[in-house]
Length: 124
Image (cartoon, rainbow, N blue to C red):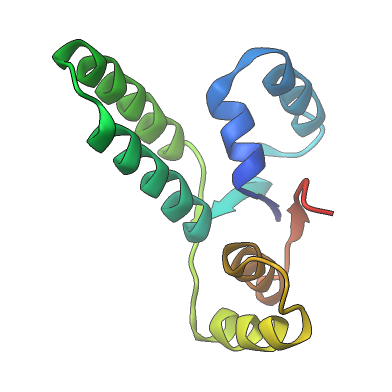
């Protein structure tokens, strides 16, 4: 299994040349082997909820909700791997070993380690 981190999912959501390059690389992998994590979903949903809360005009809200619907449709096409007790335990170990790394990145790494999966990330 290959896990896409939040940066990769964001690239795919935004489209354009970076997304096309990523899709070209992902074409070499069986689509059923590609997934993301519940942590990535949480990070992106927090961003969307914050963005929508800050919109002031109805026009901006309409556009924001359309984009959110597209975002949700994209998530319906990819498996989401959960954060379970084993991942929680590995996360706590990683947090001690790598105290300067972000909690969300460490949670994604923990999920990758316990499943096992190859984590596709730009955070190296």
